[in-house]
Length: 188
Image 1 (tube, rainbow, N blue to C red):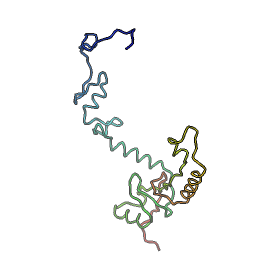
Image 2 (cartoon, rainbow, N blue to C red):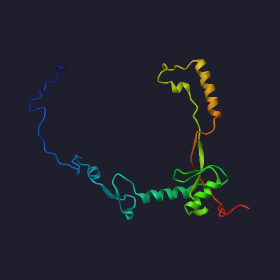
Image 3 (tube, rainbow, N blue to C red):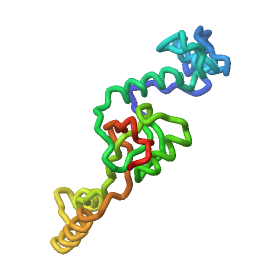
Image 4 (cartoon, rainbow, N blue to C red):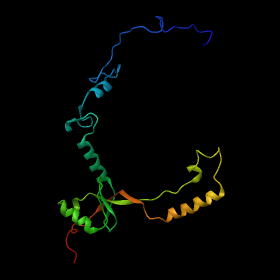
């Protein structure tokens, strides 16, 4: 205890006093002080769409499905386009992948989608990442330390193998697929 400060005992009137405060309290009983927005957010279950009130009411802790659909429509419309060439493709904003034209044709037929209305994107590969041993072991190495030459050689061999590996997986890319209008017609 510092000698220049007077001690304040727990029992003393100086330690605490009863005060009356005013502030926003949510329906759930949480006190938010002057933050009306947070009190209303905490106490509500639904709200009017903040981006477009014409969309109506949405869950407070959710998102407006119509706003999301509009954003995704705009994103797809802005994508560069390329004619289908047999590459791996996926449904835009979905988790359905197609490895060949026959699978695409089956999906179009099963879902009654015209080729020109299909929202497909070319896929991009997810490659294994090379490993930098000095970064990987940074928490274990002394400051400005590096792994041994022997360990570095082992990582160099591992990284060479990683570079030669095919993709680990695929994910939807940022380029839309153009299917020809006659995509579903039998080839001659």
